[in-house]
Image 1 (cartoon, rainbow, N blue to C red):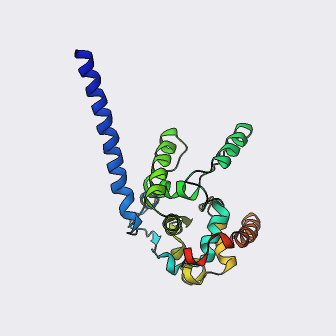
Image 2: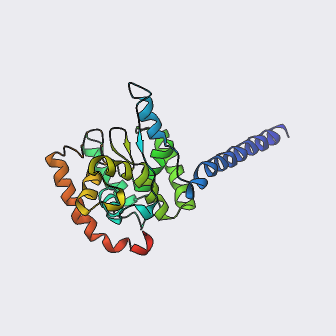
Image 3: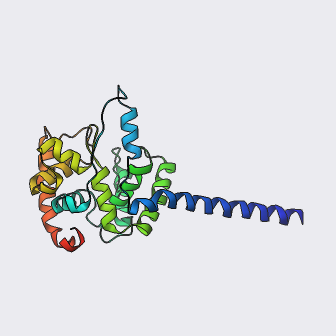
Length: 234
């Protein structure tokens, strides 16, 4: 009898813990389906890592109605061409990355846009199993609670495009002196070209590698044009 009661208590504790995790996750995820995030984990870490805490983080939220469709196509082309088709995880890309990393010392990821949104909003850089597990957990709930357009909208607003520069609106005004709604094809592709490492790659002084990537993204974005109908991106 004592063992049975002990097992029941353990089971009750586990069920309450899972319910608590789900509730906390919903409190973090669900409101952002409608409300713009005031900041993100990556912005806060970037701010805390600066020499002066009075230094400014550039972040200007814009709804997708005020963001060029070219920017949306460019980041999809650069980061996740299957974005509209998968449910948060691109298992084929994960398999290929796993096989490639097993043969190479240079580790490369296969994160989708949904996974990157989860990481940017609530987590931290790194490749630990804990971080990846939390990323997968939040990604699952993002895909359940938000439509694809909202995930892409928040990604465009929170991705880092340069030192202390977050979101396509802030990047567009800083680098091109125009709002994100007026980005042209080449400008959108150049912004997307620095996304793998905005601390290393520069929009202002693009290397030959960045220029080559910009052209590749431009071509890929044109190919993806029909996959993001204007009706789904105002």
